[in-house]
Length: 168
Image (cartoon, rainbow, N blue to C red):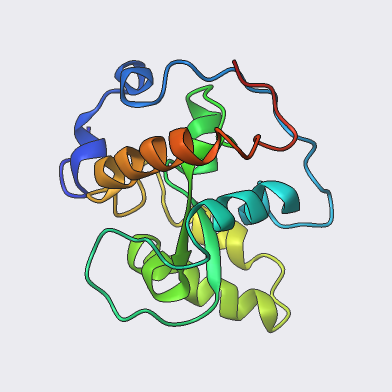
């Protein structure tokens, strides 16, 4: 295991389910072919997460709040797929600004700029640059983000059902 990125790098894949909400029953939502990989939550799910978070950046670290709001997968889709876990459930989504997102995924700033300038392989190249590293993001904020999303979801979901998924 890699030790340089933060707490997730010290959690073996088989231990991760204990880290995540165990009561979740989910279906993989339909993926939209025209959307790039980083937009896997459906539009309704992204809206739900932003509403739950008060339509503001709720990143649990000090940073300059700037740019549009993104719905970030706390545990990335690629990691989840590699280890056979789902990624698109409310406790794994958090509203953060662009600056916070690039703090967690520094290589994505360049990839997004390149993608918007016509390089449709920019994200594939960024992911390829991760090499054999199992934890390829700055994960030291994951525990606090997951604690926040679990509590916020529990409160918000009482009056606002999660779209496009089945929950107990």
